[in-house]
Structure formats: structure tokens, C-alpha cells
Amino acid sequence: MSLDIKKLVETQFPLLVEIRRHCHEYPELSWQETKTLAYIKEKLSGWHIPSQSIEKGGIAAILESGQPGPTLLLRADIDALPVQEGAMNLSQKRTCISQIPGVMHACGHDGHIAMLLVAAKILHECKDTWSGTIICLFEQGEEDSHAMEYIVPWLETKSGYHIDGCYATHLRWDIPTGKIAICPDAPMAGGFRFDITIHGQGGHGSRPDLCHSPIDCFSAFNQELQGLRLRAVPPRQCLAVSIGSLHSGELQNVVPQELTFGGTCRYFDYDKAGKPFYDEFYHLLDHTCASYHCSWTSGPVPKPLYEVHNDKTCAALAEKAITASLGNDILTKCEPWMASETFAILTRLYPGVLTFTGIANPSKGTGGNHHTPEFDLDEDALVYGTTACISYALAFLKENPQTSFIRTNEPLDTLAARNV
Image (tube, one colour):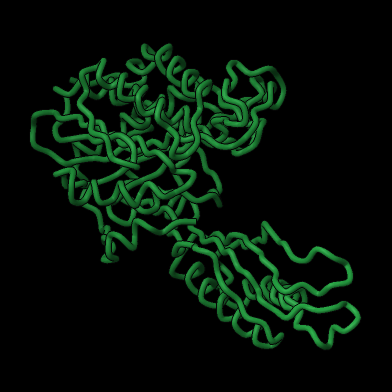
């Protein structure tokens, strides 16, 4: 039986809006998603879809066709951000607003929840048309990025399933509603953060010769840092590094004992850009501190996160499946997004694809950047994202594509702990 997927999704549009607005009005921060998880579980139970709770990881809904076939993992993140939502988006009053002061779905995860829940409902209702297994993962704590430390062991050793592929979509502020983008290679960046304390020798400002100023040491390091990108990263590679926090001293006439600084680095290729820069970053820090008779220590930071990797075979299959359901003009080009995503860890374990679903609509005031009070989404976009998800799932299960994917041999606990 051939399914008109978009038409099926359009019949569920009121449900998409209902779920999205409920989650938007009652957002919860990372690791506090108790009511959100209960709401998801209630919806799944009402549709007779079995699910399993992953401690500190989220919920996995299990869709079984009853027929042998591959297993596909579909992922949505569910946490919100500590952002105070404004009453207006870019140009007008919002359709709904957070009821929780200081907490907002400012990255579109409310839409992700709605799309994956409705996709699960539709796929479950038409399970006699496909073969295999679909796992719908609702990931908590993605903004904090630690949930993969619990999700990966569950998927690999506790679930009892062998995952053959993975898929996710992310709503995106700068792509028009009605368009979907599939970037080749890396759609989202990897990265690492740093939290450094430089230890010097403090003293009175009248005798800097008796001091070892951590401020002078940092100033020299920071100047060299910008040039380091040119020396350590090949010209065709993209890498951004920034300092986001800097603290030292209390009095104008006292050279401080310590200085702390922190920031992040982002890249689209860990092997060619991220790791070389990471190694040289700390090499430069060692040498600069030595030159200024200082030392340094680091706060607890994880190993660098990889970039999200779109498997070429899976990306081509996604283009074919999505255009078949939504038309040849649905796809648009876009720049890769310098933000990072925990989905990167899954794409080191399974061949997969992450798509972007456009939500920008000037007539509705949507198109504000993620993680800002002005961020808002055009709910019409949820139809396109849900249709794309279902279309890819059905195509993957039918074709069971053979890819050139090479799974990482990194120990699972090390891989799952990578973070920004």
C-alpha cells in the first residue's frame, strides 16, 4: 500500500500544535524534565506504543512491525533553556508563551517533541506497511550534553537491539518554512570548552618587577591564540574560538594572584581541525605560562565533541525520500551550523543523517536566532519536519541501505562522555 505521508501528517496537524504548545508553555531545564517525560509517556501509552525509560537519558518508544528488518533510531531532544521569553517574537505577539519564569524552549525542542511523537503515532498505526523496528528516542539533558553517557550504554548493551541507522532533524531559524536542508558531510559542528586558571605571583602595583602577573600572561596568550588558528588549521578548514568569561583582581593597585578564563572552540572536522588546534592550544598555554613564570590548572572539562557526520548514502536516501513526499522544490541549500549537537555521538556509532527543518516566516515574526528571547517557530513547519522524518524512516526500512560507514573503535564510555 502506498501512503500519502504528507496528507496523513496534515490530518494530525491539530495534534502537532497541541503537543508543541503544551511543551512550550511548560518548559523544563536539562535534568528537570520530569513533567515533560511524563507527558511523553502518557501520549505513547494512550496510543498503545510501548516505551522504556532510560535513567538520566530519557524515553525510548519501541515500534515493532512484527516482520524482520533493520532497526532505525529516530531522535528528538526535549529540554529547554534558562532564557526569559519575550512577549513578542521578531514582529508580533506570540501564539503561546512560557508559563515558567526564566525558562523557555528557545531552541525548538518543543517542536522536536511534537514531530517525533506524531511520527511515532503514524508509524505505529501503519506498521503493517513496513518491516523492522523503529526506536524513537526522546533525549533529556541535550543542552547540558551529558545524557549520552546513559543513552549509549542502553542502546549498545541493555536495549537488546542492534541499531542499523539513525535520523534526527533540527528546526532552524534561517531557513524558510516549507524548506528542508540536508548538508553534505557535517551539518553541525564539534567543539570543546576550556576553563583555565592562570596562577601567578601577586603583589603591589608599585613593584611589578616583584610580581608574575597572570593578566600579562593571559594577554600574551590571547594575542597568540588568534594567530594559532592560522598556524594549526589548514586553510580550507573552518574553526572558531572565543573567550566567553574573564575574571581577575579586585583592586587597581594590586597585581592579582590568579586569573580565570573560559570559552569554546568549534569546528567541522575534528581530525583535521579540532584535534590539531586542541593540542596546540594547550602547547601554547604551557609555553606562555612558562615565559611569564606562571602556571595553569584546568577545571573539569570533557574531551572534545565530534562534529555531526551525515553519511553520504543516508543523505542521498533522505533527499530521495523527502522529495518523493514533499516535491522536488522542498530541498534548499544552507551553510553548516556552527552549533554543536549530541547527535554527533550517535553518528559515530551508526550511519545516519541530520536534516534541518526551516521555521522562518517574516509574516509571522519567526526567524529569531536560537537561544534568544525572540526565538519563535512557525507551526506550519512541523508538518514538513514530521513528513520528512516518516518518509526517511519508511525508505530506510524498505531499502536497508548498504553504506561505506566505518564505526568508531573508541571505547563506549570515552565516546559517550565527549562534550562541549
